[in-house]
Length: 152
Image (tube, rainbow, N blue to C red; front, side, top):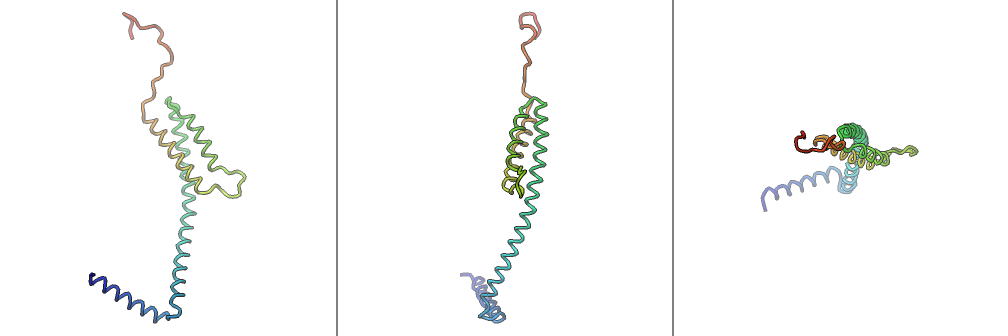
């Protein structure tokens, strides 16, 4: 075994002896438990504070990405890509996830997170469609059949 490890064990024993002397051997475990409780309470308060802030961030991001998705879907539809059907479908699912008109409390964070993932995926698909060349659509048959001596 390494000497540094043995030295650290000895130092830990002396620190424990000093703490036991200062706090008192009969109150040592109570003070350790109180210290652990206060650390746990502080950690729970910190997580609750972050949770409240995360709720607002996720809601704002979901709403903003929905607007981005809607604009991209309209642009895709103008360029003859499929976009309006996706806009209707994503809008219905988005509203089912987050809209609670008669509820006392807003939708839980899990629903907002699912809505965020949904609109992010929709916006990514619309971006991919807009970056692709528009599909070739022939409006009807040519005005005359191609044949010899006729331009194509």
